[in-house]
Image (cartoon, rainbow, N blue to C red; front, side, top):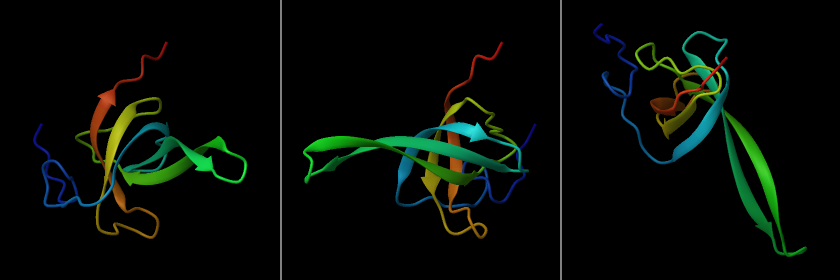
Length: 99
């Protein structure tokens, strides 16, 4: 099957720039959109402790990649694709082993 999506970062003309992030897909209900949760830690100087945080990033999910819930994916920053999307899924790092 040939990918004809012009917004696909792999096969289409969409250029990536800036941040490249790894995360887990927590929702893929919307058409061509995946919500990717990125976990990271930050250091608080006042308390001299690390703090764990999560951020949920809406990313464009092209049909040729089709990431599903539980998959670990790599996303890259792009131009603004919609009101909330400015990232696109570039590849699946690890498929979810669902029962």
